[in-house]
Image (tube, rainbow, N blue to C red; front, side, top):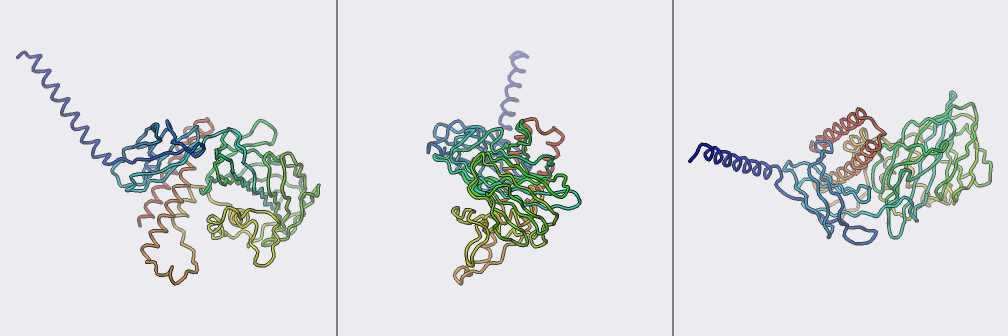
Length: 425
């Protein structure tokens, strides 16, 4: 046998051993598969050709595996044998949909929707403005609540999924968004090109979506507002502390009593293009009672019936549900935390004390703790998925520098690690 033949056989055996070693390593890292079905709820058919990504939460949203759905809407992804939490992301027509995959999950089901720039059935449920003023400055927090009742269901998504106006001279301090069932996450509005007109780059999925923006502007004792309505709004609400006066330039606004020391003015069933000019004068601070965080009401509201819509005025008879009960935690309580802070708060909050029946009291404590833990993890994952979507969207659109992106990602990584550590404690 020649020298070259011997050398070739040696190299051949080395390659075989190397391939075997790599196969063994891969098998040890990816011990199981996670399978799933993706259904297009717009057509009620399997969703084929969608990108599917498995994200590792323990390492700050790192991609662990990638694939596509087949003609039957099915997919299979290898799962790292690390015992960690994962998240499945499906991208359909440019919109991301997520499903948590806790350790041990082997199968998931996801629903997606066709997307369009304009969707029939998207309307506003409430536009709620809360203002205060002193020392030459007015501070305003404004909440928009949208309902997507499209039929068949579709997601509204564009470079300006929801548009609104800000008053002249307004400087934005913070801005949050929350999809159906999700926690508030940072989402900054972008200028549309028209004066004082802005839009959110955020999907309005079937169900309820909320946007909250806080801003301030110079104030000399009075200010005139001329908001424009681009989405029909069921209720437009202005809330002011005592010491500040409201003057409606039209008869559309009516006084609706008080709520925790805040005077409330309401305009009902406001169509697109309806002028809603009004002015505010005087000074005043939101009362301490109205600043107390009523997260308990917010948690209760999150499980409220979808038909409990705002409307009909805030002054209510005895034993009549508050028509704005679903939004009390936004407009009366704290402004809501951004994800980096909010995730840790969620992981540490104590469960509310509730009255339970004797039958319910028979449930064992370990089962209750397990259910509470699962609910907390679900809420945390819901918040993280929206933050990931928004961060990646801003990066792709060039709205965030590489340095800011890396810093935001690092903060998210730290939050996830701390939250996971606390959940295991």
